[in-house]
Image (cartoon, protein in one colour):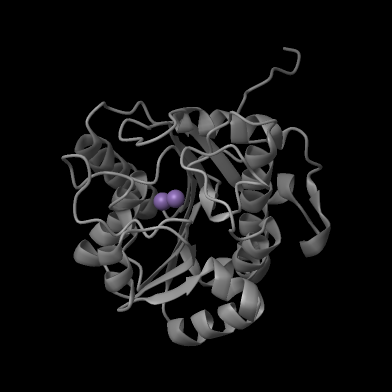
Length: 286
Ligand code: MN
Ligand code: MN
């Protein structure tokens, strides 16, 4: 048989059994409040991975030698609670099989299910929005409520980096959390922010969630809820390189591929760097 194109994440060549990392797409955007289309995020991220070389010079490793498997996308239900339960079940199964879950969104709501299954000590999230609403548009299971539900269900040890949007009540709520606004990141520099975050985490485990709109929409405009005056893709890269070694679960959500591919390209490269950074600090040694 001649070689066939799989449309899975490029260089994710390991079988499920051999894989240490497993990619799973969650093409769900039913609670989108502004511009729809993040359901097309996982396929846009996968597609652009074929643009990249397997070799990752920053970590001196080849992605096709890292044991990564791409399961494809979940067949998501319409109701958000059901999607969250489905993600929880799927991620729970990956963890029982000893796999590291890497989720591609889809809207931020999926993170609720993933964090439920992973049960980290710390939840670190990059986002333009606080996502701390108690309820939004008639449901708690909405992308605007993700961080609030994580707080109520799983862990109150939450670090939010890059936010610049939320109502007064959410800003009041954020005072109880470790919160660095996009302006603070710009003023302090991302490395100083990360020093503080890493010191707070200590020996704890981390679930890292990246909402694509954490990055300034002038840089990566493929977003469902675009916000200017945000982080840069360099900031996000620094976060991933620093926190991946501490992480036990990861997602990259809210890519809405209506741009020229910039947003998906950044997402794909950040996912690769996350895996490379984690593998360089754990797997390769083992
Ligand atoms: Mn979000
Ligand atoms: Mn957001």
